[in-house]
Structure formats: C-alpha cells, structure tokens
Image (tube, rainbow, N blue to C red):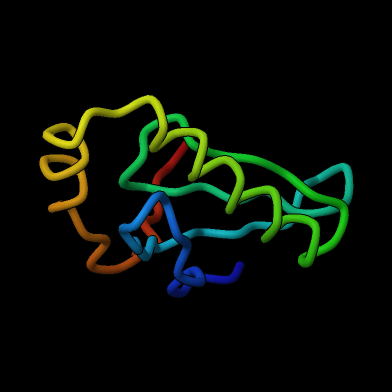
Length: 88
C-alpha cells in the first residue's frame, strides 16, 4: 500500500493538494481513494494511469461543489493510517 501526498492539481485558479491512498487491486492494477472526498475513488492498470485517473476524478468531484462546500470539506485532514486487528 502506498500512502502520501498526491501531486498538486489546479482547479480554476486555486491549487489543492490531497492525501491519496493507493492499494493493489486483487484483479491486477491499482485503486486510489481520496479520504476527504467521500466516494472519490478510481483505478488504473499502472501507477501512472492511476495517478492520471485520480487527478481527473478529483477535478470532476470539485466541479460539483460550491466554494463554501470546498472550504468546509477541505478543512479535514488525514492524520494517519493505522492497522487494526479484529476477529471475524
């Protein structure tokens, strides 16, 4: 699993930076999740394709939001990832 800052993207005149979680897909390739943007996820066969796809997914997600919604939502930050054991 990869975890880190995603490249900065330009939406209009405002630059945003998002934490992105990338995991290997069981069927091959990769899946990316953007925790502060609920439902914003995508996939790609290679890491390069995935990064292009997640950038596009973020831009499309932001296009649906008002400026007030962006301010509210973007105050959230990922502070870490923790493995938690649980019995099934």
